[in-house]
Amino acid sequence: MATYDMPGPLSSADPPQKSLGELFGDLARETATLVRHEVALVRAEISQTASRLGKDVGMIAAGGAVAYVGLIMILFGVALGLVALGMAPWAAYLLVGFLVGIIGGLMAWQGMSGLQHADLIPRETVETLKEDARWAKEQTH
Image 1 (cartoon, rainbow, N blue to C red):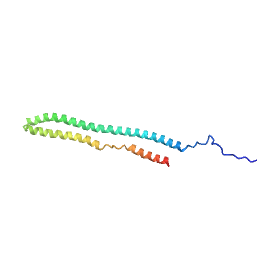
Image 2: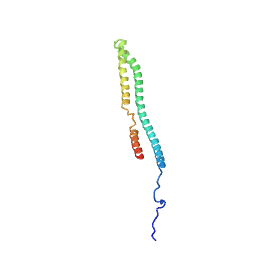
Image 3: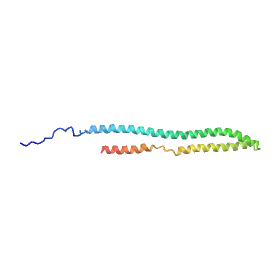
Image 4: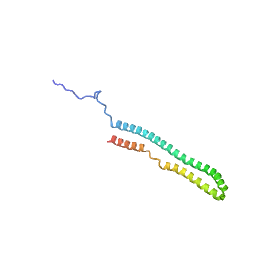
């Protein structure tokens, strides 16, 4: 009598097959983990950008403070010197005030220039989100 092997249960060497529900569960968990990592990346990039912006805003504030102190000191010292040289007091104060205003304006301009060149878009996160979208699309096909 001839014998032959009958198909039976999976052996321990065969990989277990996952159900559709298990696959979607895995996808949901992996997607949640991915979203958490993306949020962490966005926070890090925003923190870095905020630090650079804070420095530029600080430069603007420092420029304004220096211009104010400079305005007071130079107005009194130089204007009194110009008056001593024979200039009318009103003309001496006007000239000194104008010059100090230019210096303060240049300092503030430098700070604003730094703000204009700041890249506010979290480029690394945008690229990663695009990759994640491609990955999720591949997982559903």
